[in-house]
Length: 593
Image (cartoon, rainbow, N blue to C red; front, side, top):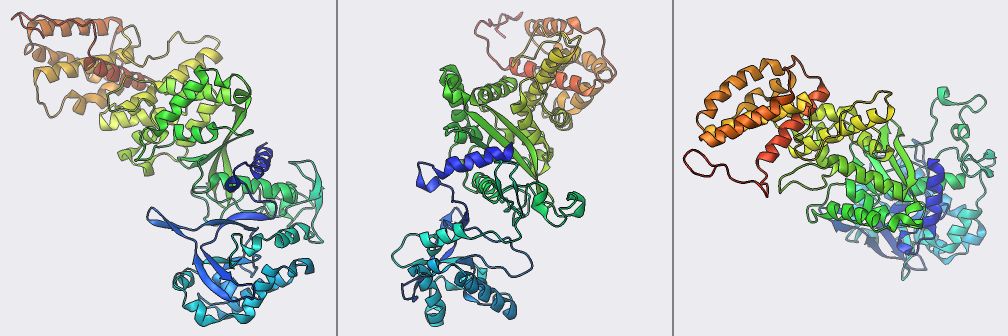
């Protein structure tokens, strides 16, 4: 299913209306080429062109379509008309002159082995003449020579006055397409296309997956006898026969989606996640913005993306063909020499949009003026990580959350998210906006799941974004009680450096009976310091909060600790939210409170 979807996407992108977005034809790949040897038709060097441009603090090379690179091993094997400086020019950069001599000989022999029809091309003739006529003094005088030599940089050839590289000339492309498969190539029915075709034994490497080998890794590979079928030993790809054309298509498409400048990928924890659609859609590049962290120069990027999705759903934009357009979401994670599929979802854009909306509805929470309306996944993850550092985010958490988002509104978020959020609240004695939103989302999904799957579902209703005066949960009420006691202390002793939260939150949220008896006794001293009217108002509030609490339990399980945190957060937010119909309380002195 995944390979079929990538194969279809490849063929769609091959016919893209924008020429710069078209994927290379079979036999070619997109490759960054930092340096070009620009030569005349006679083979004389004109200049060594540096294609790199400054992107931030780093130089990035221009990307070209070149013949598919060979899978490099410990042996010597050359690419066609492009490779490292050692292969192309035969210059030793690592103190291995004999090996470099062999590399250069292989590079030249690869060009000379092309069919006679290709050898007549003026571009190939110019390259072969270049090797015979190379003036090293002219080459070494080039401004870019020192940098190319130090990096053993990748380079290729271009005729002076042309835009395309010599390896992109029609004669070279035709020779690649007409090249016969090796005589020992196995033919079989391709598992993706169903065609009887030559089987690709070694699939091209997938690059750009965070944490995987920099040289790339594979989705389809067999590197040990234990993974091979009977009769297919040492034939790797024959265990899962994929034709050479399809193997090229899916690897090219996936590398295109994972490329550095891709607008269809985001990094979620250790999961490199890509999005694409069966038909062209603006939401291919919009959806990653919904979950990704907005750039510093455009902090409202995510909000605009969410609003665009909401608007499309509300205006009926997803009611026709656009809504039926199937979207693919693929999460990839490193796994030694291979790439593992962390999650994969394929669903119509209409349904995908509804599930994203449900996700933000689950997260909706009363907030301060500086808190974002639609928190990014990165901020939600760092909020539950130790010291708020990205390095401390549990490695599987981000991917598991996204998996739950696209799996449906009744699928619970990972329990690890709730555990981490509650744990950070207790460890830091701080229930902030992001943690409260995460706790609410996790609890509401658990409640929703229970109502769908249980024979005797719990009567508990889902939590609201703001304070719910009717919620009877003892844990939620105790959280409200703790917030009220803290507010009484703050008003009785203005300017305190620390409140009961700094000393008692962890114990109050986990072992209430050990704390609340003391706190309720101490609050009497605080109430005496308040104006009479204000004190009476707090007494009434305490009575309302405790009206459904029969007793303080010895221990609260983790979900109830989450309910405690929500009660505390909601009550604190309510204290600092001005109500339109709220009238001032008149104290005994006649002053408004």
